[in-house]
Image 1 (tube, rainbow, N blue to C red):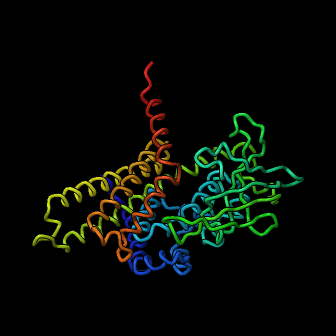
Image 2 (cartoon, rainbow, N blue to C red; image 1 turned 120 degrees about the vertical axis):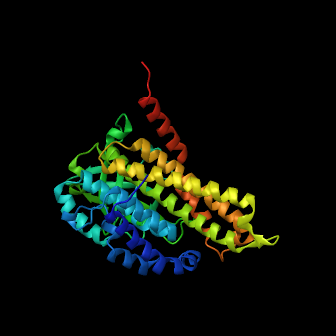
Image 3 (cartoon, helix red, strand yellow; image 1 turned 90 degrees about the horizontal axis):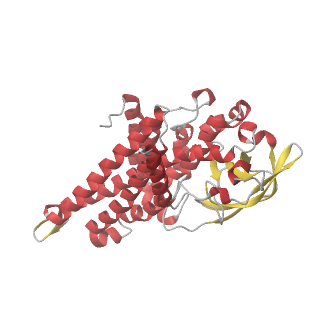
Amino acid sequence: MFEPTEDQQLVARTVREFVERDVMPVAAEMEHRDEYPHALVETMKELGLFGLNVPEAYGGSAIDYTAFAMVFEELSRGWMGLAGVIGTHSVLCDVLTRFGTEDQKRRFLPGLARGEPRGGICLSEPNAGTDLQAIATVARRDGDGYRVTGSKMWVTNGRYGQVFLLLAKTDPDAEPAHRGMGAFVVEKGEPGLTVGRDIGKVGYKTVETVDLHFEDFPVPAANLIGGVEGEGFKQVMTGLEAERLNIAARGLGVARAAFEEAIRYAQQRRTFGKPIAQHQTIQAKLAEMATRIEASRLLVYSASAKKDRRERCDLEAGMAKLFATETASEVSLEAMRILGGNGFSTDFPVERHYRDAPLLLIGGGTNELQRLIIARQLLEKHAID
C-alpha cells in the first residue's frame, strides 16, 4: 500500500487547496477561450512549483519524486493544461541538476526555481518525435560558441518561456547517431530564433505549444550541458524518465477528476424511478473505473518510490505511464457515457478531461513505444541461458 509521509501529504494538500480554490472555478471558461492562465502561473510561482526538483542550494525545494508526482496528480485533477506549464520546465531543471556544470547550475537554476525565466524543451522535429536519433537540427562549432540551425515543434512554453533544453547534432556524421549529439541551454534574445505558429490542439489548450525555428542562432560553448559533446542524447533520455513519471501522474489526476464527476452525477441523475447509480450497468462501470484508478495510483507511486531510492526504474516508469494514461483515456470516456448528453456538453468538465487524455497517450514517448520498452526490459530481466 502507498502511504505518503506527513511532508508529502502537506505538499499534496497545499496544491489541492490551490486547485480547488483558484483553478476549478475558472478552468472551463479559460480553457474554452484558450486563454493563457497568467494569474494562476503567478500563484504557482509563489507556491514554489517551478523549483520542485531544483536543489535547495540553488533556490529550489528539491522534494522527492513521490511528492513531485503528487503535485502533478493534484494539478491535473483540476486542469491538466496547467500541469503542462511546469512539466517541460521540470525536465530542463532535472537535466541541469544531473548533468550541468557548476557554472551552469549557478547561472540558470536559481531563476528557473523562481519561474523567472520559465523553461521548456526543444526535442521533437517535423520528422523526428519518438525517434530522436533522427533529428536534423545541427549545432556547428563557431569560434568560442556554436551556431544552431533547424526547426523544433511541439515546444510547450515556447512563446512565454525564455530558456530551453535543446538537442542538436554536433557531429552529423557520427555512427550511431546518438554519439554525435549535444544538449544545450538556449536563451531567447539573440537574432536567429523565430517563434512560429501556435499549434491548434483538440485538448491541452491554454498552455501554448509552438514551433521554434533556428537559423544560425548563436549559443555560447559554456551552455553545452556538462561541457562535453556526444552526451546530449543520454542526458535528454534521463530527463525523459522523470517526465514519464509526471505524465503518468497527470493521467492519474485526469482519471480521478472524470471519475469524481461520474460518481457524483450517477447519484443525482434519476431514471425509471431511481438514481442511475442503482442500476447494475452503471455500478459495473464505476467499479471498473475505480479499480483501474487504484491500480494506476499504486504503479505511479511504486515507480516514484523506486526512483527516490536511486534505483533503476525505467521499466516501472514505463508501466506506470502506460497504464495510468490508458486509464485516463478509458475513464474519461466512461464518465462521458455515464453523464450521457451532459457528458458531451461543455457545461460539464467531463468533455475537457476526454479531450485532454489523448495527449497523455502520446507525450513523453507514445504508449506504443512504452510497450516495446517494457517488453525489452522484461526479456532482459527474464533472459534464459
